[in-house]
Length: 497
Image (cartoon, rainbow, N blue to C red):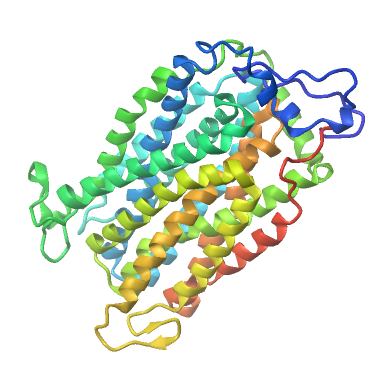
């Protein structure tokens, strides 16, 4: 795969199903993606016992894998976007300063993830261990999110808050890398898109429930001290010190602990997985070979570059959506939470539908449509303010800007859920089967190599212009770059040579 004249790579040992064997009459240089992925096609599935791969054990494994999305989604929903980020803006007072500081903090965490992701992925593939890494990074997730409780008004330490937020974010991202690498083990090639979409939709539902709990029972309005349904925060939490809103950190940690139980109960490393001596040097050699040979695999190279751009832009929307609504439209945490509910419901529905679209038209077509939608949304967002929508003035006190932003939230949720699900399906098609975790490490590198650039650019442009609207314009160009590079991506990846 990585150079002319090399022997065909062995099928992915982590794959729990039988491999598709290639007859001697099949030229090595013309192997298809089905051969590379090592999954059975429709014609050779009849021999698989009903109580084996497709039986109850496999169904439990798939559902256990779904629960990672359910357990980890609140970090994105509650902390990155709809509750904690706007709360930090409230504490800092200045929306532009908050957006700038948030960008620099997330950018630093993204840089650490970008550097380590492919290395740890390569080590995991050689050592045959994924769950141990998931345990470790889950601990970082729990510690980082729980410590956000100490971001109290009157005693707010921005640097400490950003440090623990980054620790949790690093834990969440790395746990996701190792979990995503298990996707090819869950079904045949034609089912991967549907499984990925269903998992993403399931995760959105978990995020929605967590958000509803926060808004109705815990997060208080800064002016009234009441939650969305007009009650004091439960458990006797003090609204004057914002304990209800600060509880978002411990809630995120507890949620993860509880709902990762099905994952660890039903998802296991394959029996063939064994730690090998010299795993680290071997992994680094493999990674070095993969990186050197990337130009010889133009489809993979182009896809990594494309996803680097459009996923970075999408993350920028997620990271700054709540702060933008708070600073530009003056929304409260409660209003931003309602915005989040709309976005998540839309995301769950369309992630599920997108899984079927992926199965019918393939992930590349789905990704292209989503990029176009998100580019349009980014352009429209810049035009929305309390006095303007689409460059047209609106009467003072008009609800039209708020309505427009709610619609934007629904579109971001829909397109964002679909494109992320289709993107990990596409990575399965592009990656080498015996180095799947390394592949998703490179995928994380692609997602994070510029992840510090987008937030940093937003921080710089916002600081220079003093305008949150102008500050998000870099997202438009990132989406367009991603769309251009996608033209060089082959739907089934590079042929194995």
